[in-house]
Length: 574
Image 1 (cartoon, rainbow, N blue to C red):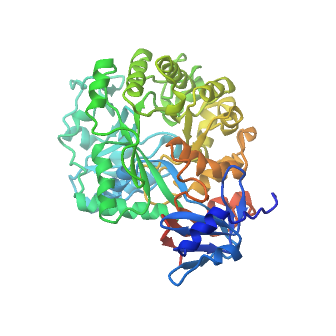
Image 2: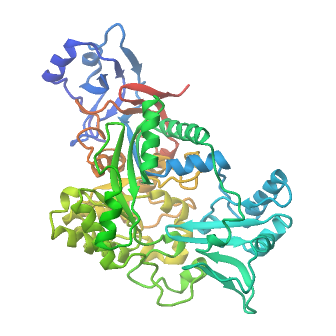
Image 3: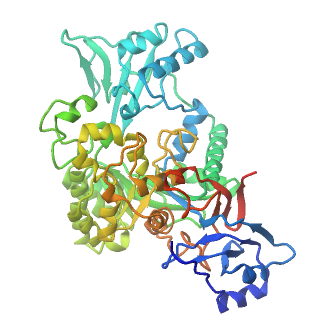
């Protein structure tokens, strides 16, 4: 273990501190500053929302005054406030306010959930199931018409499986009848109705929700209830040591919701808001869509700030829609329901349109980002970024690659050269690696979430969750426990116990950087947060254990004992 280095109290900090006592000091800790040298200390002091001193207990105690709160860390680890740089908190809050999320693991559990809802709602009421990814279902398939018929013979029931621009819905017989879907029904533009060998609809629809919306009750939630649900979720983030989040696909309304919570004193963490961009892909159409947005990257304040624009490029690895360089192959057919041996996934924006969008966004002063999972999808994005680089340097823009699950050294070097940063999710590896190994093969899975590949090329990487449904840090659809993400990055161990791609393991220090200072870098915040250094925001977490010394298999059990944002305690365990 690295020798303990106690930082001396700087002369400048001492002079400033002499003018007024600190508001909060933390002593007797194992402080991991996550500065450039990964220096360590035992105590910190915060005044007016910023760190004013980092060093030894004796020096820091001198900064206490009559109103100073002193917290004894009891030799537990103290880290910078964690930055959860990819969540969909507003969507999760609305969903939970409507029907609390529950992770379902098998067709049997899905059927029981439907039976329970039928009892609550009564005969004839529509039942809309929670999202369950096929990789999480023991049978490795989504429920079919017969499954839902058996569970809800007297209720229309719909299972929706959605990712990016693709929506698959499975309907039972009552739902088909209620929506008047027959063999003569025509799908909406871009949609499909699956038929059996006799030409009868099977109950599976693709991108055809327009056939159902007028029948299914809207999942509306009163605004007051939604805001209360969102505040509850943000406080749950605090409990795990999170002090900043990036909302990863929002709009001006979502941005204003966070502003409202801040104005009312109900915002317990800092928020960067990514704005989803909808455009026809022409230069003129993209410019019109962007100019209609009433702000741009960097607008806002230290609590609520505008981040990048987001463009959806391909689908996802869990769904067989990630756009890959090589065909998926026959092992993937059964999981994804594909049969074409040449199938490589789904590129949803043509390369020319992608270039128009990224170049236009950069010209108009925005940071840009893209949802892209497959290696060929990443190639297309980087081609567009390079085209924008011909207009003006793109490295200062810090383009965000969101997901980018299958890196290779050549791509990583290209990413580093362009100054692009990566936002990726170890939870997908942990929860879904066992199922994906069978479908995608060991060669692909050994580089899945390939953190060492990125790191060796010098790419900045932010680890995060892509949290979108559920409130529990470990049992949400995508667990948002950052210590689970770090544990997975350190061990490369799946939920089923397999170690896949051990050469991609990173150290604990590297993992911690990826949820603090490197995550801050992605949003141009590295000089304001992400490390415990004098002058930065007073955001930190005191953990329930020793991050560096505890067994790596137990890292996911860590929680915050105390969470501090802007020098104020926002969470304190009993």
